[in-house]
Structures are given as structure tokens and as C-alpha cells.
Length: 144
Image 1 (cartoon, rainbow, N blue to C red):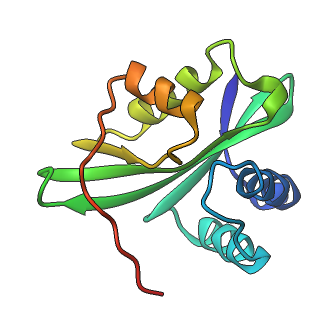
Image 2 (cartoon, rainbow, N blue to C red):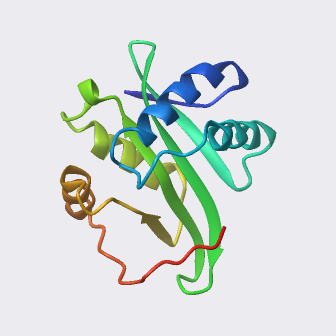
């Protein structure tokens, strides 16, 4: 698998993959298409806060990584949030998820890596635990 930073010409591929992610059960609920469009627009403006990488095999986009970057006093430095890690179902298994996480950990040096998983997403949780991730016992709140 190869990794390539998202480019302006990748919009249709990104929209299709992001839409599939939000319909996969890996997220609490689908998001409006406008959110995906807004994310793509932000990714094309700058990479200060977020970056997206396509995961390809034989020239075909088979998944993507969306990361957000922030600073945390609690962790003493930069934090890389693995916002979305998605592979098309037919490409899951065979170590690709591990390869994707290792790419992030190598490409985005940070004092902490954070991610979220749906409680029912057993495969993802097993992967993250196997790679050394531990549950962070915070209750998160949002206001929109």
C-alpha cells in the first residue's frame, strides 16, 4: 500500500470514501454532505490543522487517513488526532490497518496520538489495543 497526500483533483474520490466511512458504522451517525465538502475545502487551503492521505494499491484509492493536529498542555506537546481511518471492506485485513497507523505515527511525530472508536467496532478496538493504544477515561462533551 502507498500513501499519497490528497490533491485538488481527488475530490470525487475523497467524497466517495468519506461518505462510505460515515455509512460504515464506524461513526455515530452520517454527517451532512456539506461537512465533507467543507473538510475538503479546508484541506485544499492549508495543512496547518488537518491533513488527508489517500491509501492506494495498484493505483486505486482503497482508503484514506484524516488527521488533525493540535497542541496539548496535558500531553506536553503536539497531539495527532486520527480523525478517520477508513479502508474499503474488501481491503481490510492482511495488516493494512496496522500499516496505516504506523504511517501516521511515523509521518506525524507527536507526544500523543488520539483516536475514537465506536464501542461496537470490535475489530478496530482490537487493532488499536494491539498497537499499544489504551482507553482514555474521559467523557467527552460537545456543543454545536
